[in-house]
Length: 401
Image (cartoon, rainbow, N blue to C red):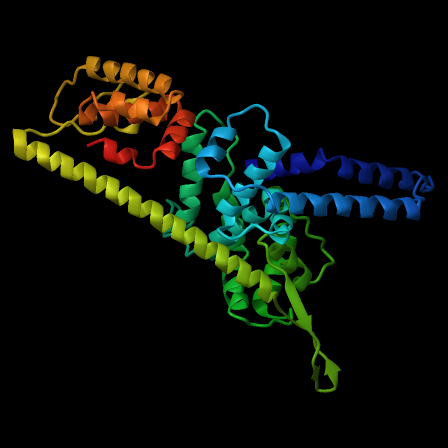
């Protein structure tokens, strides 16, 4: 009820809705509204449109022809207040290459649309993923949990922006699309199925959309007219997922019948990007497993050499709440160790500006658990510096010993 009231309140505050209400009120009072100022200079309009297209085409070409940079340079520039025009073009080219994993061409820059395309592909990735488990509340109602890829995205955003309260609720958008039945429809369409628009699933999607138009507007930012066809409504959801449709009109029983299918180029491009994103996730998971195994091997060596439980790497919750319970084998760990590690971390932060060698030389004077503690402290206190350091030295895990 609270969500419904908020959506209705937001809709009622809309200027467009207020303008429509005022117009209808004036008509009911017997007034006649005459439109004015709608005439346009067609020649000037075409000239401005051509100029805008030329400017856009030149921008696409400059981005594609910009010099290639590495991740270290890109990360360092993200913290600068001002970038030269050529530096901004180089960063834009790297972002597009890193996002899609393919050669940057003017056509790809135009397709990217300033980063809007990848958001649609991420939404497509979410709805195509298998849903989570079914949860039953105390009233016996069943709810489907989002896929892991959606949950991790929400969780990482909250972890990265811990003091923000305006996070993007990707799980809510996924749930709305799931309730619409988009996953089953998309699975069939991607496999090459053609539709006419009178299928039960398509009509069910249209009926649900019209019945919950205000909620869909508030969650997915889509306006659903009550007089539109099911195929038109489906096309609006597909456009939010970087997909479009094609149609053909064969002759059946003496009548023309229109069939719709997904644009093959859109499907091929989306599959290529989704495959690239899956490989990146697998690579990150492999690196996490390697780091975990390296830490376990170090703990085993300490146990074998000294016969004691090695102090664990300080977990994330150690920093910030003064909880030193992350040190194994100690009932009442001393805070002085962690304070000293924080001092070491501050020294490392100061040395980052002098280069990786200065940082590595300082870390070599510490013990292994102190080095791990220093990296955790840097990540918590100065995440930007941590990203810069790890980008400049991808082999930093080997320094930990």
